[in-house]
Length: 263
Ligand code: T3D
Image 1 (cartoon, protein in one colour):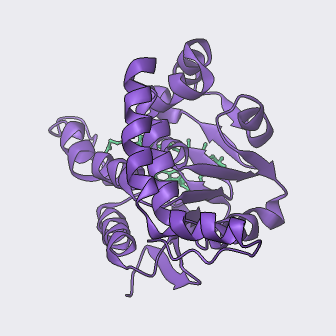
Image 2 (spheres, protein in one colour):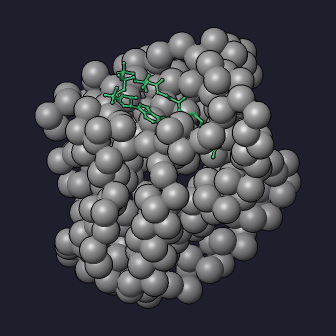
């Protein structure tokens, strides 16, 4: 697969999707959207892929929408941003959330606008110590999209979500870690390697079980405890029927390392 705006490789069971428009801090134009869609489709359908890493080239992770693609000249018709969200950003966030495998993000630099919220939609987020998270939308009269108005209150609470969204302050990776917005801040030169190593390790684990964990944790944001208990019962039923569960228990009983196939 060859792309102009992203890099996409598969190695050791891990798909690595790298945003690659470093001159504009990996902001999204229409072509990049369509390439990311294609890469996510391939990630989903390739049976060898058992984890995904998302990262960026250059000094930024992603600065959201490429604003040079928006005609705001006096007298020009107002762009229909809802259409753009419906066609591009929402399907991307839904795809990341629905992928039945762990999605690991390596935030290599500034993550602004939709870029910040794409990172926060991933399952495990590592960020370079120098990276910043910016809900930049308010600075141009927009609201956080790409799931930001859902993810933020659910991770950092309403007070911080509101202030981050209205002030558009730069949040450091360490602050993001302390607030539970991301998993870990790591040294800049280690962030991509750490994410890829974690993904490769996860790609040897019970993929179906991990996908069910992902489903359960996401559902908890809107479920009552009763609903969540029912969901755990249902998902555990599915988990208990996987080959990997059988292998995990057998390996434990036989005091050997398990070999999980993701089945
Ligand atoms: O429109 C729709 O479809 C609706 C959906 C919207 C989703 C969104 O994401 S809306 C929010 C869009 N993003 C932003 O508002 C962020 C804009 N960027 C910034 O505020 C700053 O660039 C950063 C805070 C991210 C980083 O600042 P700094 O000082 O480190 O870098 P810089 O000098 O501003 O940027 C470096 C270059 O990248 C620069 O180009 P140049 O001057 O070297 O040729 C800059 O113009 C370019 N760049 C950065 N962000 C964008 C961008 N070019 C186009 N679009 C961008 N979003």
